[in-house]
Image: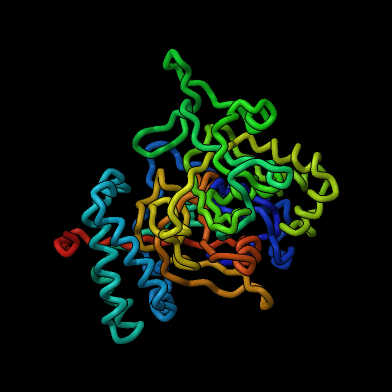
Length: 413
């Protein structure tokens, strides 16, 4: 499949990631929006099937030499962070996954890191990888490997620990009645006093009834800022007392997710061609009540906790994520911490799309990243990363690498 950007139509926004704005505008008109809109990138994995398919046809092998040529110190840092995560005993609970054991997963990253350090040229590297590793590709949204790659970034906002006329919109801590699966953290709903579990109230109900009053952990300037933090799942907050605080994901409800960008287009508030985060903010200033009503169409709700900034910005593994080296996927189906090769097109600030063939680490997740045909690339921190994250929207392929069974896993332990 040839890589190609897709038109500027809004897919779901991750509950941990910001992919809502195509900030560079609709410059990637590959096919008509009607054609692409019919493609379901969020098609769930059929029950009993695997998200990864081992490559046996050499023509489907990724560009290993090209990806080796793009390696840098930041890739090494990201690999070391995955290895650190594998070293923690708690990481074992997530394996086996896709018939990959914990030992095999960790040894694969360790071995690949050593190959990247020691192989003298890209062709030697490619030959060694094919000799020692099995290469798998995501089945994608269509069974043929098609994956939609969007982007996310880490924002920062002004905030306060106490409510005031300026800071009047809260982020809530995790409520005591939120029920989640103890193994994978998947939200189940609201646990009632008698032990039964029902669906958690919607975003509109939570915010309009003040049902969580008393559990506020921090206050932001307006509902749109709070919603953007919900979408990202974490934020660096510049407090009104001059201090810096970090807040991160503490859980979410089981209610369905609806993207704000899509809602604004459907309502006629914005055209697809003008959709951007600045445009959304302008619409908010002009008509906050209407935008807030559209925000409430997203019934899903995210909760937060304060944490040390030592690992900020941290992904779902609890280790820092690295710009263009950390990837977010559906952690209910893909092996955590693994080495991934992403083959897609990436947005730039001024030069249009560029080929993006890079090794990355599967170190994060997102509320709307819930299928083998979806993944998010971490673009970095701050305003430039915001622009890149909002503009990232392209199809591609995603490959995983695991040592062959005849290779020794002893180096991992």
